Length: 275
View 1 (spheres, rainbow, N blue to C red):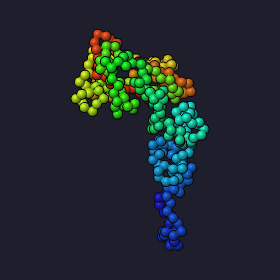
View 2: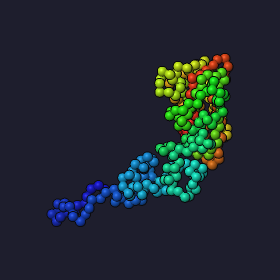
View 3: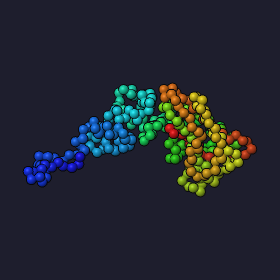
View 4: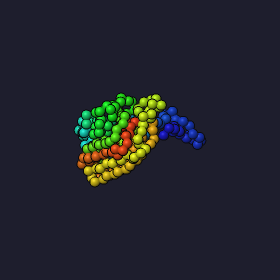
């Protein structure tokens, strides 16, 4: 492959035959290309699909993509792509699941990681129950490009912080992690104004917790002390065993010690991903 053939004359010296042509990647049998591609990761398969028409056709084989899809991909395809899974190729289903989809009136987002094939989810602060969220003395709703949901909730000050939320979804079997995405300071490009009103988070820790319908639960307490950047605070891990049964997750973030006020906190979302 990639080199020409030669013939040998009567004297034993090689000569190039004018009747022979150079062979290229396009001469490799399509099924052989597909068998090689099946051992690669999705980004590599997509890159090699650009090499030639043969590689492009080979990259669409169902047996390449089906092992890379979640076990319950038929349920996910119908729920998120609004197609019957049998009407699409496995490559199209993979590509479709990788595109972020909003649901619950735009308050939640789900997509499949292109490289690992794991399902990731975001729950916006808009889908959570937050104490005093509609009282502008305590909270502001600030538009920003720093959030996938285009807005964040900014806490000016409050005595009683309580954030609760829940989620129900057919997560594929596997181990998952749950995080709160927070920032001490306003979501502004001016670093001098980001943290000037941050106060009260070094006196008592914030309690993060979640519980899963399968019995898994986790609780962690953490002082919030790193200012000026978005941080995903890891709450814990849980395991999903049944891909076909909807899993319900309840989560919360609280700091209900009323001996002091706290403020200057930006709340974006809860992030769940395959570990």
